[in-house]
Length: 325
Image (cartoon, rainbow, N blue to C red; front, side, top):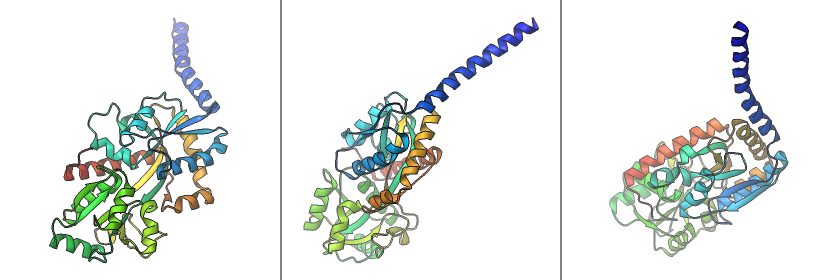
């Protein structure tokens, strides 16, 4: 009887160990075929460029090709949903970013949850926005801008790439912390917002560096501040908004996500390859060209960062009553 019980325990232990051994062996063999990286935005944008740079740098470290697929639409929700519903085998990944954290609150009827259905794999970069104004605006500094806005209610129009875009919520966070009210003017993309800012049709845009940097350097737009906690290397003369509004920070960021329930061993393997790729000085230089700073992390650290971003933008969206287009 004692032998029978012992045999039963051994069989139960073997039943537990066997699947784990299979999963480990599967992870060891990963990747055995090309990896599809879904970019939930159109080609040629900043996120697309980041995806291709990182894919090219990580591929040799995994000895496998990355296939970058642009699946833009629905404010990045289309591509994010594709990955959320994909098989959790490490062969379909997401170029996740700040829009996903914003959309978690902005959209109420999604058939996926960014927080629940996308597993954090590795962060890639973070880039501040630049608060740029038309030079005709009588404000040379952030404090002067706030003072002007308080003295001239309704006279400052803030353009953005659309309702709920990173630039929009950055501006609303500024409203909330400065105690002012700028009128939001949404555009279909950041480029037309910058065009109208140059023409004086609107007064301010919280812009990505890629859209505004050349105009700032040419003097056709005035940079009042950057939205990171510290100054940007490419604009060392422009202060951080946080120097005047303590705690203010709003950055665009990107990283790699995978379908939830992707085996931890595969997530760790991907994390190691991506972090190794990000140590490449040439990649850092390419990212720095459009104001981005490399951001490496463990999957757990990236998960905490995403959770904090979702919580932060949820408060801003509710404060400003932002509605999706």
